[in-house]
Image 1 (cartoon, protein in one colour):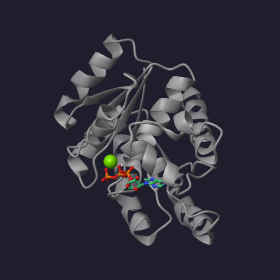
Image 2 (image 1 turned 90 degrees about the vertical axis):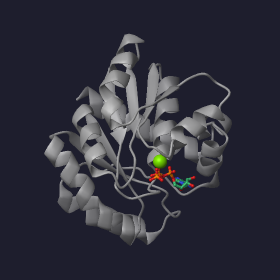
Image 3 (image 1 turned 180 degrees about the horizontal axis):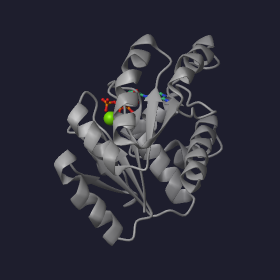
Image 4 (image 1 turned 120 degrees about the horizontal axis):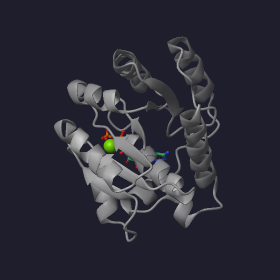
Length: 206
Ligand SMILES: Nc1ncnc2c1ncn2[C@@H]1O[C@H](COP(=O)(O)OP(=O)(O)OP(=O)(O)O)[C@@H](O)[C@H]1O
Ligand SMILES: [Mg+2]
């Protein structure tokens, strides 16, 4: 079973949005997917409650319960677990990072998000886990996108070559328990998410 986590210390960077969307896209590509909601705010759990479909399965687990949740997911024959990490929680973030094969760090192209990047990179390095950046909620074709890429490059981690644009469809999906690939599967948002999942999947194979 592959284990990935969306992690950043910055609140609202897009962890939950990307976790549930990556999970649904992975499932559509044939994976059996579990989301572990490791955030006491339980946003991914709320998404699952609003959802009609029974999958992907969402399990709530605080940091101390991670091993049990991961073992349960393995026991259920899951092929991928996506951990949605909490913001502002360094000890929990480290415990998550140690259990993941790959940490995806969502970064909005904004100064406050960039300021939070060193903390996430430090967690990735300390856990000796693979890390990568995903540009999240980007204003459409804005110059900040390129500037943010340039600011991230010195950290030496891969950067998802696409970007996730700021689109109402993403916000709507999360509040209605769905995913953009489900209600607008031909749309640009769905295309971005499929590209993201494809990139993660290829990275996991390497
Ligand atoms: N690509 C996007 N397009 C539009 N809205 C977005 C996008 N990504 C995130 N948002 C919105 O930004 C807000 C924060 O997103 P989200 O909850 O995914 O972030 P988070 O990192 O999980 O936050 P927290 O740190 O509180 O857990 C939400 O209202 C969400 O709908
Ligand atoms: Mg969240």
